[in-house]
Structures are given as C-alpha cells and as structure tokens.
Length: 215
Image (cartoon, rainbow, N blue to C red; front, side):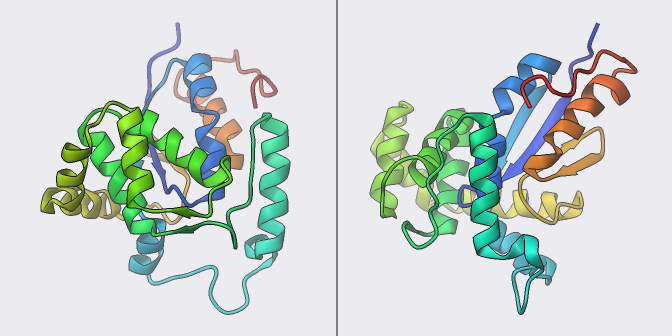
C-alpha cells in the first residue's frame, strides 16, 4: 500500500522546465498517489533575493540560451507535448504572471489556471501575455473579471506572493521547478524520475518502482 505524500511544487510560468514538469504532474499523481501543492512564484525575484544569478556574466553551457531551447525541445518530444520557444517571441511581465497564479490559487483554481498560462507561453502562437490575456484565461476557469482584477491589485496578493518566495528560499529552493517532499528537495524537470523513485522506494520503503513508466 503506497502512502500518500504531500509534494510542494514551486514553479514560474516563464520557466521552460517548469512548463515541462507541469505536463507530468498528473502522471506523477496517478503513479504514486501523491498530492501536489502548486506554489507559483516569480523566479526572477527568487534569484535576485538569493544574490546569485547563474545567468549573469558568462554562464556555463547548460545555462546558454541556445542549448536550453534545444534541451527543452528534446524533453517536449519525449513527453509528447507541444513546445514553442518563447524567447524573442512573447513579451510578458513575470510579476504579473506570478500574481495572476496567486489569485487563481485564492479561488481554488491554481493548477487549472497555471496550465492555461503555460499553454499561452509555450503552446499558443502569442506575441504578448498581458493583463487582458490573464483575465481571459481566468474567465475560462470560472473566475469573474471583476473578482480577478480586484484580487490582482490587492495587497493580500502581494503578501501571499512575497511569503511564497520567502518560504521557497527558507526551504532551500534556488531555482524552478523545485519539488519538496518530506524535507527532500528535487530541482529540475529532469529530477522527476528521482522524485518518483523517492516516493516509491524511500518514502514508502517499497521496491515496486518502474523507472521508465511515464517518464
């Protein structure tokens, strides 16, 4: 019998690897019975508050934009999901996107809404994701325009986003996507297989893990 684990998922809408990881959440839940708590943050602010930017100066190969684009395309092909590179194509405000997801979380729609914003960023042929686009996708989730706009500008939304970033830093998060379960941190889309292994074998003291299933 697999125990149900609570997994904290820290992500940012503009992050390629957050998008890729998000497409596998349902498979992870089905395979392990875990519960995933979505925590939208602004990864630019996370990096800024940690005072270390891996993209600054001359980044190592894995942080070079051309390689990251190719790598993301390879992962998308493996997962069988659409992928359109947003760099140089989509204009967006990372703070707006993070706040919008926080608002959706207030209305109990964070996973559904985040999938819609990820689609806007990485699947749809958009050139801009502005407040109107965020509102339109909230309406798809059943959130009224008026309620969404009020919450988007509310101080409480600012506080909740700030608190989420602070919790992430205090938990040791240094980038997105990051998964945390039982105090164990797994960073990166490519660590999903290790997370799944942990949920099966370490968290449950089981030996039924099938490493190639779904991932």
